[in-house]
Image (cartoon, rainbow, N blue to C red):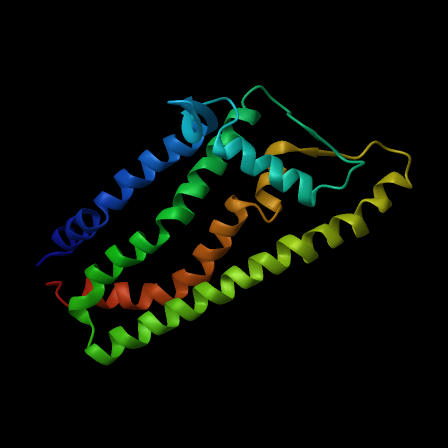
Length: 204
């Protein structure tokens, strides 16, 4: 099997995940929860809304993390749209991450022994738990404390504290920052196994 054929096989193995990621991203971008009356009973269902899941999640991060005396600003007309899209994609990635790991494991499994497969699964479970705990600690304590410590240096200068909305979603412990950090944490672990899967069957 040539390298090009192996790359095609890899793309094919994650193609369903890519389709699901696109679909879930549109869902989180367009839909929100709405209470409707069905046969006299109030039921909460996903519905197309301007207060989508992405917007609600962003407002939650803004409420929990941003200091009350700091205002968010949009530096250009596309900032709000791009921010909502980034949050939606990140939420979709988080929701589908187990499926992503499943597809990756199916791809690299032919190059692994049974004990290596068990070791990888245990390591992924442990690293995922530690990552979630680290994100929770950052969200509840580290980032709010950092903002509260840093912004007085701005106010003492007599300037108005602002935060660009696109910079906020990247630097805060929001979903976009979490996904980027998680990708860096996992990439070093998985790249060796993927390289093994790519290189072993390749004819040079």
